[in-house]
Image 1: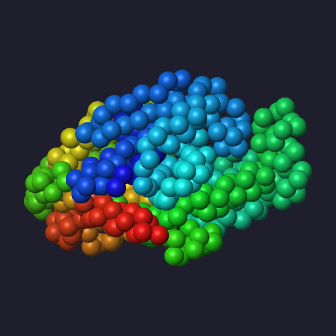
Image 2: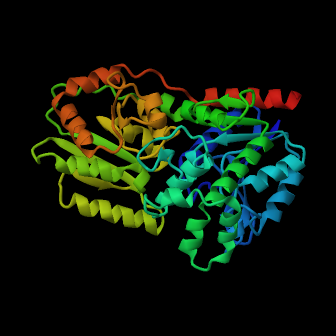
Length: 444
């Protein structure tokens, strides 16, 4: 069996959670006799092929200077024909898509369907459902994910800087007038504001078509599965298949150190990118609130991507000032992640959005390191408060500060949490479930 796995970004220039997931999945599938090839876009005008981690990679071009219609997926990006021709030549048995971005969108799924290929869509992030991208209603509370024009339009408009008093009114503009506004106003901010209902409608229609084109839709966590059901996805088409960690973690010596009588500072780690939704600012401010005699060390292994990431990093570090307890460390290679996680007393995951994992939670648990995390989304599905980890209200800096202070005073609590961490799900299990799904679809 031959499977095409597509996603919007890939190694070596990008190493996010979806890339790590696909890399692990493909390696396990290949070891089980299910040949997989990864296809992903790249900026430029040329296609390339190479191997990464023993996997065949095809990169098709996304030409520069995208139009607004291409950005909004109304039309395919320039360079799409390279992908279309390559896909036809592969004569694969299954098409499996993992992203929904300009370079890997509904047009790519349509192409696979036109070729008669059985199709699978794995939903990895909230952005498939939530136009704001966080699944937090008005940026403050957990949303059930049901797409509604007024509610979603108001929430999205506020995320774009529209005052809360005006956002609900914009979301009620009749669709025909809203659609006209997208193209008739030269003022970009005004056009975007007036086009809010049309954008929500377009987002909803695109989601419905994407899901209609998919023979199976895979959700990687329960809250995502529930949100897809709320948006009318047939239950018989939905599959819940949680994430797993790669075999490296089964060979890593678990973190069994005792913290009860240690005189060393509580060593808190953070792994991830410099992005506001990852909540590093919450963590840093929580530590800075503590008196300097509180024995804690925060080690940040962060990756700053682009101008926005670097700007956010500088803002957070400015707030940290010269606090000697905050250590800025280098981003980690994948090979260095397991033993680094095992060196922490606790891993902090202060996410400010609805995570579908993240994988770092599973990876920390795999090496026996408890997680101190936000009490929302996939984190709350993987961490049981006071049992195998510690949960904190996501946006409450005072609560984060109090939780850190409590753990520094009660090291025996960390030992109990560590001992209660159960063996985690491995990527081999994920691949077995996916291989069975592919076989079932091939028989239809």
